[in-house]
Length: 33
Image (cartoon, rainbow, N blue to C red; front, side, top):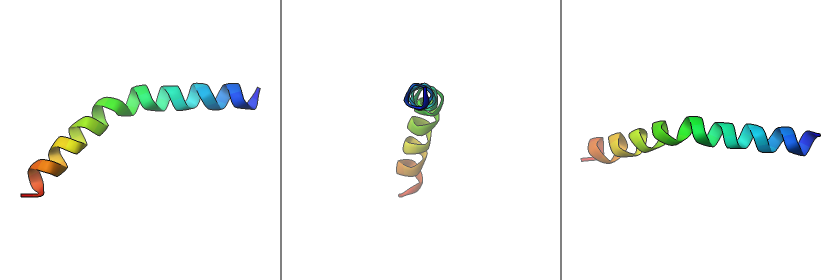
C-alpha cells in the first residue's frame, strides 16, 4: 500500500515537473552566460 502510493506520487511528480524542469534547465543555461 505504501509502496504503491509512493510510486504514484513519484510518477505524478515526474509528469508534473518534467516540462518545468526542462524550462528551468534552458533558463539556467541561458542566464549562465
